[in-house]
Image (cartoon, rainbow, N blue to C red; front, side, top):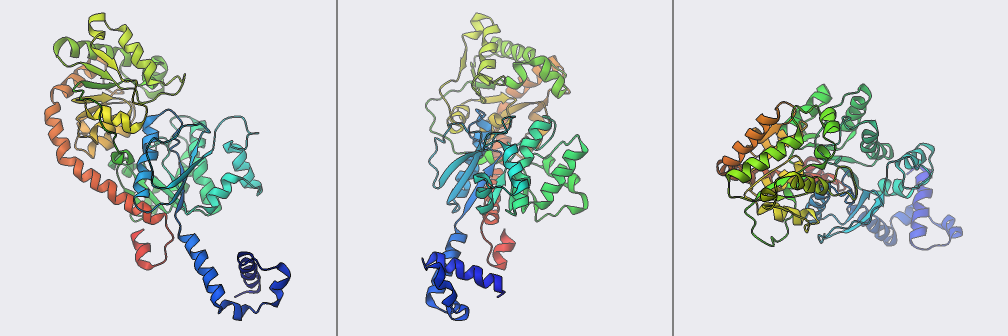
Length: 461
């Protein structure tokens, strides 16, 4: 043992045993290390190291986006069942709380974007503190954690949402790498990365991570392409979306209706959305036409299920759902109900599970359907949905709004509804495999977050 390590060990032992500082010099290091008291102290230290504590980023439960909250609930529930004891969730400083009872100690810490750099919770201030070696409670939390688990909102590890959003997504990952805390990238989408800088940062992060999961085959192939010769199968793995393991609340009533999620992202600013995502159809006209055709030719009613409800936010699904109902003829609008009581991901999943068929652009709304055995279709505005549906054998039920015009999209939705019974059988054949894969990836993620003491554990992690 080097001289510095001896002094450090003596100081730590004295602090633990409440020994006065001036008495340390009288200790014999060799005799001390062979003493019963020393070994008891070391045992206590080892126990503290073995306690499991993670930081969760990219899944803030206070965004109003129930899909993102579903990611939080799913991973925390899965890891708590596997022995996780403590979790710190990075959020936006809101007051949202989980309705689920999680068998672990959890807390939230604000890590907010924005220009108010004077706030201690501002991500830019925290990053500057890291650069200059200044103290920060959040940095201390990351430094002392067993691992930082990051899910990037499921689909936000890309720069297509702009440089500010990309910076928000990349910073927690870089901070963990820089303090030496193991980084685990939970199942998510990778790319596209339009700028050279974004691609370089993404490559750096995925190479430095202890474990990396893609949530579908398409994302997995993107990961391979990003890393090239540095791709390592033991480190970079194929998984499934975390929300497939989301618990479901007890259903209050049997619906039997057609479920429809109206995306506020696409409806509330249709021209902006069309330009931003390159849509070939009129999203509002698609939903109006679909609802008219379905209600006029079928006895099924429609249940509108908002999945994003930020207060006053421009992407609010509830605003969009009300607008859709308002523009339909009165005799048709009377057969449309808007779900307003379900205010948690589990409650929404319970509602969706009671529909006979479900369609939406919010991917986690459609995952709530798929994971409940309900046949579904996704109106896609990016590549993220196809791979997830493919894992359930329903890749052809992703209708790409970027390549289909308005009439073609309406016809595809009606055809999907008519074929719902066949799709339900296909889903039934594939769903058990998806859920087994979900459980296996949680086993691996759990092992990767714990201290590895043996070769067997290292291989498992």
